[in-house]
Image 1 (cartoon, rainbow, N blue to C red):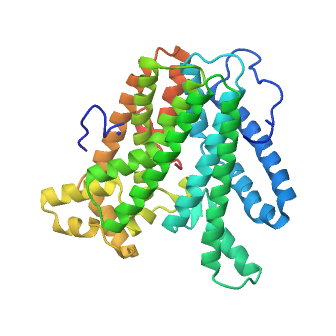
Image 2 (image 1 turned 120 degrees about the vertical axis):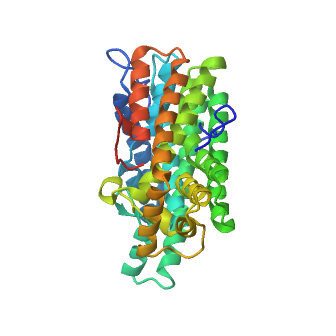
Image 3 (image 1 turned 45 degrees about the horizontal axis):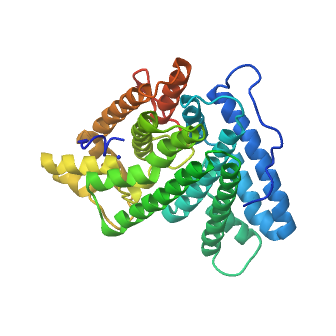
Length: 392
């Protein structure tokens, strides 16, 4: 996979706070794992408060929409964005009251819920985090209640509202945090930029499907906008600006995040084609069946055309029809035969290493650098020369 132009392709007012007292570590800095647990506790308090308000507004809306937001968020996930925000804060010398960065992490988990719920609707994905996707769950509820009209249409429409509410709660929480922070204006600007990039990436994904795009450059643009930026680069920056980071140190963090975020997305591409649903918690062949534009497919098609492999070029070419089981098997074989899988694996390893080199330029303490290394290993699936199959 060719990457050029200075890492362009590589790394391309609300209700009162639920926390009344500043949260400070009792015995030195929290670890990233401890910070994630603390952010989850903060998130639980926020969700409880929002649910109480939702029940005051309307009990049916609270039961069907608000409670699904809370249940989805509480069902898990890697919490990588929270951990990267913590690493950014620590890399910028964070100390003292950790409440702002914990609440920022909680807001990131809410915006992630929005992104996943909406993405599943757009892709028609049936499974998420080892359970029925929200739109599928709502369609089943429609059928069980004997409602009129199309269950699928109801499920999709209601799931859009679930995602919208998660985003609204995320925005409320981030705004509350920004208003209480001396660096609030910069925090909010990072957040605004992140939201815009997420929408741009999701639209580029849809646009690629509709136009039959198949090039590596287009795939990298989608991967960078849709996932790399908001998974790692922006969370790192959000944490760092809370502590006033600027200049070369912040630039190094952004570069580190861009590389790690793209490695994360490339790993997700591989899991989408070769992963084990029992491990990942989502289907292993959706991207192949729909011929979604991923870097993996783009590299495979380019290699097939360059090598004169007509069968591989045919099966990897973009198309509107869903792939059947035999076609999916042929696509997997083609991705192996053309070397696309190996190229993407090698690129992930290169990106992860480059991310660590960029992070070293921040001047972060050794303990923070070790924590960042562990997070990059989790995100990229590359650990001491071997790969993992974790859910993205």
